Amino acid sequence: MNRRIIWAIARKDLLEVRQNNMAWKPMLIVPLIFVVVLPLVVILGPTLLNIPIEAFTSDPDIQVFLNNMPPTMKAQLDGLNSHQMAIVMLLGFMLAPMLLLIPVMAASVVGTDSFVGEKERRTIEPLLYTPATEHELFAGKMLAALLPALGLTWLSFLAYTFILNVVGGTVMGRFWFPSPVWLPLMLWVAPAIALLGMTAAVLISARTNTFMEAYQTTGLLVLPVVLLVIGQATGVVYLNVEIALLVGLVIWVIDGVLLWFALKIFSRVRLMARA
Image (tube, rainbow, N blue to C red; front, top):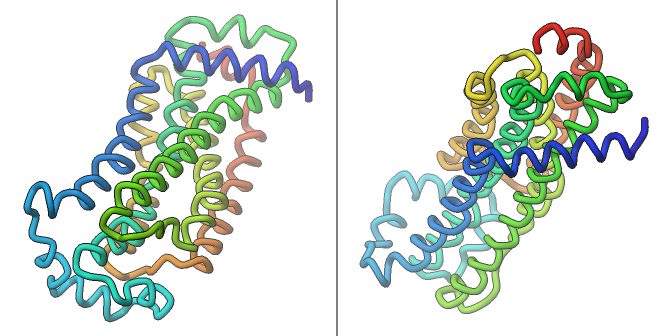
């Protein structure tokens, strides 16, 4: 495959996404809420808004969560007061899977815009008549979705780390984040989820006629992440390094199968027929 052709397709898609408000604005809302708003509420709320943090730590459901917590996680709470414990539990443990919504949403939004957006802008026919092979077309679309998804995810993680250590450090009295599970989540699981969202979104967008139709369909991709969030919050699953590596491995296997299937059925002729 020609790398220059692949990069040219990806660069063109990235420029078009930047001009499509419906594509890039949703990508910023989720990081803003989970990376900035929620951490500031948890860290500053008890002092600025008089939120009773003791009610959280004394809640029966939280006590069950604490009692069933693995020893390695429980050790991170030793010697903490109620406010510090709430910060570590909510922002260090429970919110961990929530940030995985960022790569899947970002990749699916850009992937959705890849083909169906070109249909709506009536720019897909010139693209399909270029010398690029089908694999080069697909690779270019894939690269255009993965780059912003991973870039936004890792920038969000850095911003999250900054807020938790700098703003949260005023309460914790030290730099305490990230905990060990966050590194495999960001470096192993997040790229796998981004690839899953991208592959599914590109396939869906290639077979739908409007951006909104494709966007609504790709919304189902967040369900596995939501289930993981619920499992972590309810104590059904306690994310640690081993579980994060296992979850990532499962997703990478699914990615491989889905990518093989996508390349097998991807057809320039079908796209021309639907353009």
